[in-house]
Image (cartoon, rainbow, N blue to C red; front, side, top):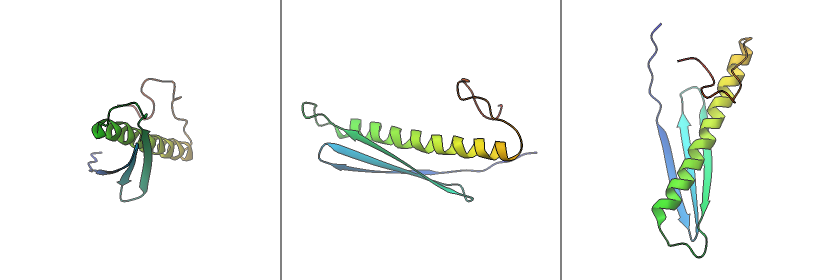
Length: 95
C-alpha cells in the first residue's frame, strides 16, 4: 500500500518585553493540533529576539509532537496493539 500526504505546520511568534510566545498549528485534515511554547529572557541577557523565537518555537513544536505521539499511541491501543515504550530510541511504528 502506498500512502502519500503533506502536512504543513504554522508557527506564530509574538514578543512582549522579555517574553516570547509561540503557537504551532497543524491541521491534518482529520484533526487539528495546537502546541504552545514560551521563552523568558533574563534581565541581564542581551536582547536577541531570534534566540527567544528559537526557544519558544522549539517548545511549541515539542508540545505539538507530544500531542501527535499521544494520539498515535491511543490509535494503536484502539487497534488492540501496544506501542513501544517511550524509553526506546525510536518508539512508534517501525520504519
